[in-house]
Amino acid sequence: MNYTTLEIERSYQVSTIWLNRPDVRNAFNEVMIAELITAFTEEGERADTRAIVLRGRGKVFCAGADLNWMRDVAQYGYDQNYKESLQLASCFHAIYTCPKPTLAIVHGAAMGGANGLLAACDFAFCEADTIFSLSEVKIGIIPACISPYIIKRIGEYPSRELMLTGQRIHGREAENLKLVNRCFSDIHATEAHLQATLQLLLTSGPQAISHCKHLIDTVANKISMMEALDYTAKMIAEIRASAEGQEGMAAFLEKRKPSWIE
Image 1 (tube, rainbow, N blue to C red):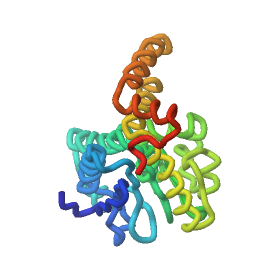
Image 2: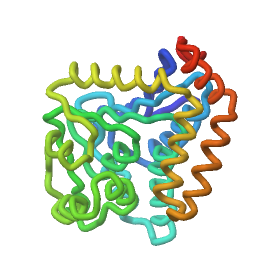
Image 3: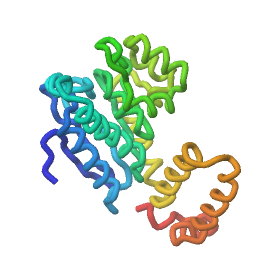
Image 4: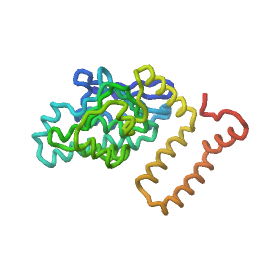
């Protein structure tokens, strides 16, 4: 697909999705939202992609919603607003449910809805001078569509503090709150940690990674503890009997590398 707001790079089994509107600080509009849904869906289905990295061109990761798009949305009635908002919610859900591991590299700033993009990823890394803000209340609206991912990442009361005040925090504070997994002093340290994390992911069974993501989503969001008893027993039985499970266990017992490690 030819994207107008994104760039896709593929290298060594890793797809990098670049937010590519640097002239407006990678602010998202209806086009970028639709393209992100397509990109994460298509890259998630590629057999030659083992991990997906999300990052932004230019000086910042993402400044949130595009002002021109917001100006148009402000004129919509309820039905059109609902349609646009449902598309935005679907964007975050597409990232969260992507079968491949997802990693956000955040620099410069992540404002408003941009925090939903990074929070929906499996991993988020940033630089210390990166600014984060859930600033929606400052303009009389709320961070509705991103709230499931923010609250899941950092918990209820830290979410209350950030969402109700709209305050700005920097990378170290974001790390302390667990909004990002790790914060680094500069881009070089960030890149080094990204590569180390990708190496860990690429030496794991690709199907096991995908099944593990589904396992976490199901146990965390969809079933009770009693239901998990039967579900988890069935799932591990299926995985042990699968071709990848058999190869992985055989490689371990035979003290060799499994077939998915080049």
